Image (cartoon, rainbow, N blue to C red):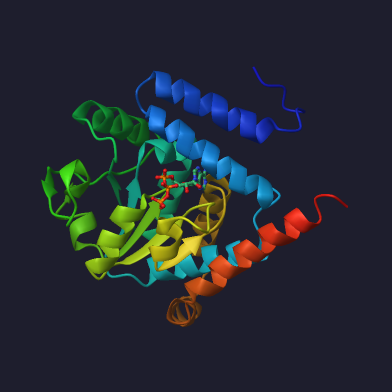
Length: 243
Ligand code: ATP
């Protein structure tokens, strides 16, 4: 049990949760190292949501609200870290939710689906088909879900799949603490923030953003600005580290 007054409580709590879900087969072992990479970048950001990331979250809410057919793609780390944050976002955004895994087994799909349903998520039903232009099982997705979506939120995505979705003409929103990753650079919009800070912000923007403002924000998106802001914040953090 981690004492709540521990200065690194949030980080230790997340690690404990991921380790528990890894033991249950929900989070992959590879997912644990991906989380470590994210934590390192979060350290450079001061482990807080920057003003620029908050604007990216508002813009992401605008994209979801103005979409024809939005989908939230959930992988093992997202379910492990944030299962309880998905249903409120689904409710306020009107998006479908699809489980989509890099290290895919039917057993993991079932376990993650059960965890999400237990937290009130309504999942897309149906069989996955090989519909994305990618090799191996990463090509699998649902025809009525990711395949036909126009806007997809892919928290913690890998670069190849993000690029493939973009090449299919989709608007891709990534949540990724690493502004240098292929995902961050190929997404239509990258939220450089920690997943469990980003999702509640997205939900409250989805609940409060008026239609005309959502349309204006969605039309004025400049992802290079968000990536440059994140790098600038990290540079600034480093240059003051020795003060
Ligand atoms: P890419 O394939 O996009 O070049 P990668 O190989 O780093 O990048 P993955 O190994 O799939 O991609 O890692 C997923 C990304 O998620 C990492 O870049 C990491 O920074 C980020 N990440 C991990 N945990 C979190 C989190 N809790 N919140 C936000 N981002 C995270």
